[in-house]
Image (cartoon, rainbow, N blue to C red; front, side):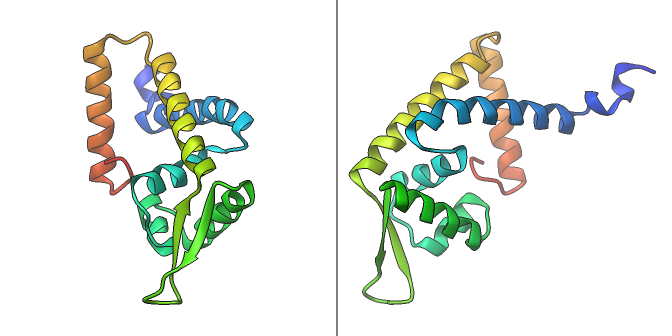
Length: 146
């Protein structure tokens, strides 16, 4: 049996394992900040704007209940606050606090440091090709980052 005939040689398996590896390493790096990787996605979206709580779910590609849970955790940490919208009292806007902005900057720096570590064995052209390919795949499948 050739290497191409095994499940472990499939792109899906390899990208899944690499994704888990990267997530585990990122989790280790942000844990001292009191964050988990999923929190960093919320902070990143909020840093780009001040969306309503319901808009976060679609921006992150997760369910509303997952967003509520993540916001509860971030609010407890002091990184975000929810504010009722004056036009529609049923909706809540989510804002980063000063601590949340600081955590978002630190998490972004840690993510880029991890990128450099993970991609260290690739040259600049290979890195650019890989990033472009992943962006194209994310876009094709309607995933964040595409």
